[in-house]
Length: 174
Image (tube, helix red, strand yellow):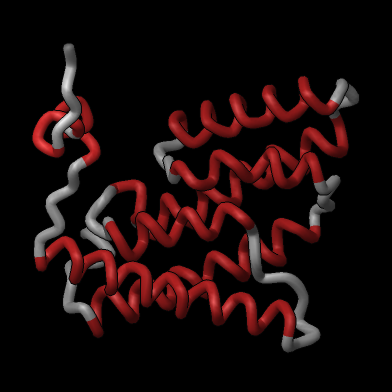
């Protein structure tokens, strides 16, 4: 007979146990706060000005790297800017020049975007989602300027100011 006790009921779920240390909690709070601030700036510009759109869904996942792991090569300005621009441009190219069913266009565009990011050494994993958004939304070339280029510039300016000058981190890496 098998008896469930508090001691053995969680035995198989040890992988779910997370040790929350003070440095981990502090890192999470800082990353969450500055992600909120950065996306808040983009949201205000988008919804409270007539300047256009500054938000792309992939920018949310960029926050994880920029404020949670700024030391990562994937979080460096070159990778963030050109990764987003390149993959969004691939999506726009597929919208305008490739006449295949959407489920084929999306998969080909994502694969081609990943291929180009790796080939050109500008890998930024969140940017891999850009072709999906671009193709589903049938975005035009204007999407490359707003939100991609202008949004990335704002994100990177804030990431540099926050990481380098406020948090005193070595960002961007040399």
